[in-house]
Length: 263
Image (cartoon, rainbow, N blue to C red; front, side, top):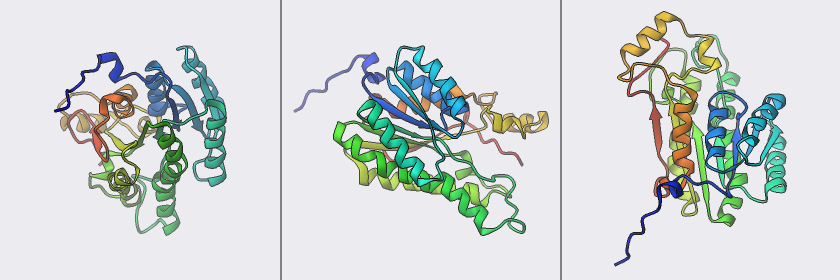
C-alpha cells in the first residue's frame, strides 16, 4: 500500500519556478490574481489591451521579487495570441499556468429584439473561442514541463436566469461545460477549472451599481457584502497551486453564498 506523503503547508501554495500568463491582467480581478500568483513565487506575464496599464501592474509584481512581462494583446486577434505565447516562451522558457480572464460582452443589454447575431457571436469570440485557442497554444508547453493549470473566469450569469443576457450568459455557460470536457483532453499533466465571480467590486460593476441594486443583492447574500477582486483571486490561486492537484473540470462560484443579479 502506498504511503501518503504529507506536504508542508507552504509547498501546497508554492509556485516558485512556475510561469503564469494572466489575460486581462492589468486591472480588477486579473491584476488581483496576478499579484496573488506572484506572491506565491510565479513569474507573471500580463496580456492586456492596455499596455501602459499592464506595464504599471508589472512594476507592482516585480516589487515582490519575481520576474514580469507586459504584452499588448487583443484576444480577438489570433496573431496577437500566437505572438504573445511566443514572447512568453522566449522570455521565460516555459508556460505552466494560464488564467483565461479577459472577456466581455453585452450582458444586461442584450434585448433580443434589438441586437444582431454578430453581437452574440462576439460574446462567444470573447469568452469561449479566444480562451479555447489559448489553451491549444499553451498546453503543449505545460505538458512538456510536467505541470499545467488553466483557469477560466466564468460568471454567475452562467447559471442565473435574467432578461437581456442570452448571449453573454450563454457564452459563460459554454465555458463551464467546455472546461469540464477539456479536462479529459488535457490530463493528466494539465488541469483545467473555472472560477465564477458573483457581484464583485470592479470598474464594470460600479458603472451600473446603485444603492438600491446593492441592497437587493445583499438581501440574497449570506455573507453580507459584495465581493472584492482579492476574493476571486484566492480561488484562482487555489486552482493554480499544487494544493488542487486532484481537481480538474470544475467550476467554483465565489459569491458570498448567494445570488446577485441586476434585475
